[in-house]
Image (cartoon, one colour):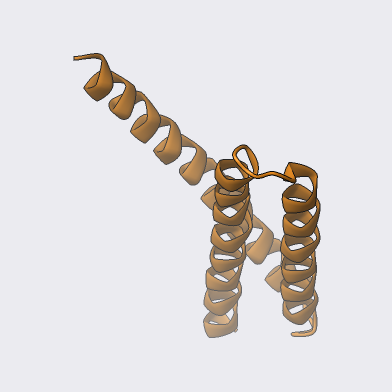
Length: 98
């Protein structure tokens, strides 16, 4: 069971990386695109389908603990990405200011 919980955690981390890095990439591309609404809509749909499908597969393992662990990995990875991207953004601003 510990092996499957670890796999669920890794799956949650992977889903989060795909979801939030896809969002970050979409914002960068969508702001300069000719049709930003299409970028944001298609990105949202693709990211949601991937995330929901991933959590559905995790739920098929048959125990609610797997979904809980995957959700934990998803949320913690989101928090870590937010801090990492904010730190990199402020470091770039300091670099451009000097």
